[in-house]
Image (cartoon, rainbow over all chains, first blue to last red; front, side):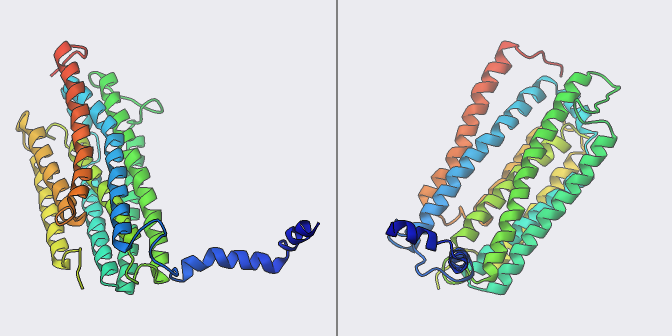
Length: 241
Length: 98
């Protein structure tokens, strides 16, 4: 009976406020200890987080790798059709987007440095800058997809090709949309990660000697950059233009 | 204070080098080198990826364990590519139209 009375007392409004505070507190205030209990010290914790991220990135290499493999097999088979199809991609937008992503990556690297030097204001701005240029990339990508749609290059939905081997060309555009689409999903996730990190950085979460989340988010963002570094020449510059 | 990151200058230099390589691969895309187009494009892309990994991702100066983890992903990818292509390119499963 006494137990039940204790249970019902947990439903009082002030208890909900208490619970809400407990959820918000770790975000707004630095944690009591920077080292999680399963680690000996901060350095071991940092090493573990970095290794975890690199192992995750290795799985990502293979995730994208399947598509790169498909691309390689079909391009080696239909080299001429792939070159013809590639001429219909928006090379100007693709090229500008490469520069945008490279710049965003540079800002990310500077953000990690700002976190390490414990410069809170700079860290917030660099993270916001990283997210902003990621967003610019996505906007340009949207413009590009719209152009592809009006040029009737979207497989199944509105594909039209009046030159040789439309089937082979359609395979190119399947791969084009799958590869750039999967990449765009990664960019979108990255933008949200950067915004959350910027918010946490604003509360001084990463400028107290513990900035591992910024570091490993940076590794992810640079990886997404590397994927695009390969996508640009393979999709937009296949065969000379 | 010991830092694991590079001076800001290093990042800007890396960025400049990456932009130069982008300009290079973009302009070579308009020159007909036959089969060499794709070889040059991939060589430049690999160079750019290495620059990003070495400086932005701090592989330069990181522990051996991290370098190993970074390399295995690529090695597994190469195994997947070479075994599959070894099959496709030698058995005539896919009709070639170069």
